[in-house]
Image (cartoon, rainbow, N blue to C red; front, side, top):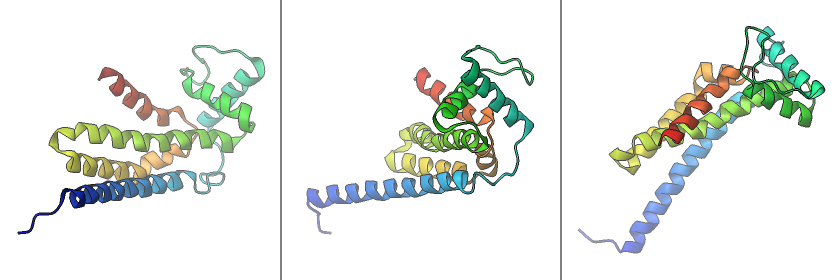
Length: 171
């Protein structure tokens, strides 16, 4: 058995990291594609809950008021509504900017779940941790419910990011 020079081993590790990064990039691209493809057409129409969010965000923009709780539609916290108001200021009011906001939040969940899973499996070695991260990211990227709710202007899609941010704060 022939021993390899250390430079070859370092080159192989670098190539391995590049392959993992390329795999992650492809998974993220797939996830973003599924969340943005024909977003202006699919799903058709506007759900009444989406309309409430849009109207509340429009009131924030037009009235300049920033309540800490929105009472309409059984009451809601303001994070998603304020985010929609910001998007309305930049892109104007409409269904597409509303859904784009949710789609981008859903897409941001993908790298966050990769990092969380990789960290959770880090005790088992870097290779397994990366593999688990890639698998969980791929699963979330194509999971019907996550894709579906990423395409609707509803606050539920930001729950995963809030949870992941809370997990990071605990550490």
